Picture 1 (cartoon, rainbow, N blue to C red):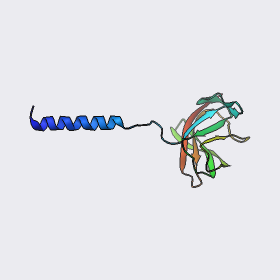
Picture 2 (picture 1 turned 90 degrees about the vertical axis):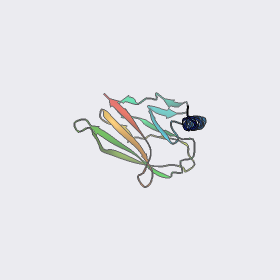
Picture 3 (picture 1 turned 60 degrees about the vertical axis):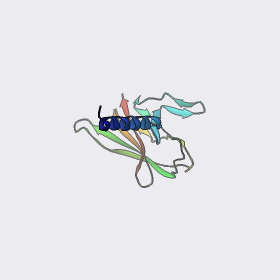
Picture 4 (picture 1 turned 180 degrees about the vertical axis):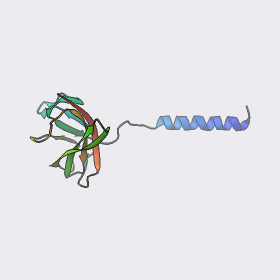
Length: 137
């Protein structure tokens, strides 16, 4: 083996070992998920598929989100076009030091079956977290 090939092999091995030694995480920001309700015993029935009705939107993060005025927004998938369209939006006020937030309320309901994209938006309508949910009859 030539010295040049040996050099490139050694460089490749060093790069591979260097990359393997760094910690990598699949999720490094806020995670959104859904449950049927949240109470003193915690989350009840976590899933991404529910029947129509009221649900609780959960957001969990390893660090304080630094948010105060936020919105939960639903976009619904139009099956004939294959595109999401705005469906409804709900305003909330939270504490900036929160890492774990649940959103629920009398108006936070999925009224009709379909696939929804749900967003947690900051005061500038920038996405903080999002998730998909399927609603069935």
